[in-house]
Image 1 (spheres, rainbow, N blue to C red):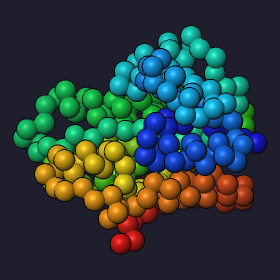
Image 2: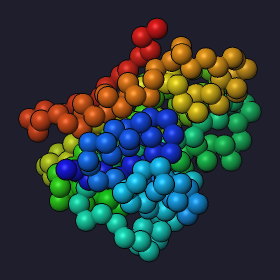
Image 3: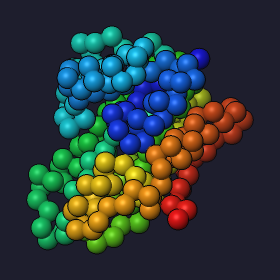
Length: 229
């Protein structure tokens, strides 16, 4: 039995991997943005512990974590939360940029920093759910892609820094996946949304579990997943 803390467990890829880990008997700690969301997650995943912290305000996470019971050791930290707002560079406001970078880059860095002692104790694994946009940026994706390019840089630096502590780091770049975020993206693009065209979150969860369960003699550093249809 292992212990994992997951962000973004309320929907999409985060929910799929949380369910899989719960079903096999692992201990889960689920990050929620507020008390109401924590109650919903606790009801959805019986036996899981919840931690309240708003990723939109990374500067307050240290205080929030300090007021709550936290895991003593962590076998894995899974970053699957994120936000997206499309728009041309000439139109995006600082508010959109700051919101995107806070949730998608600064908050993962801060959560990781705060939990590194527990990860080092267990020689755990940090897994970042990135995006195809973390490898290539297209028109109207500048803010989101910049945050995801930065997230890859964070993961690469962390991997080198923590190698001597036995902490493994993996970045997963899923292509378009059938999640509520993808539905929002289609709405912003003015396109009809058909979930059947895109990757099932369960397929991404399978890839995440493969990285987490890999024997200690190997490490998946980067993994790209593309729609097969």
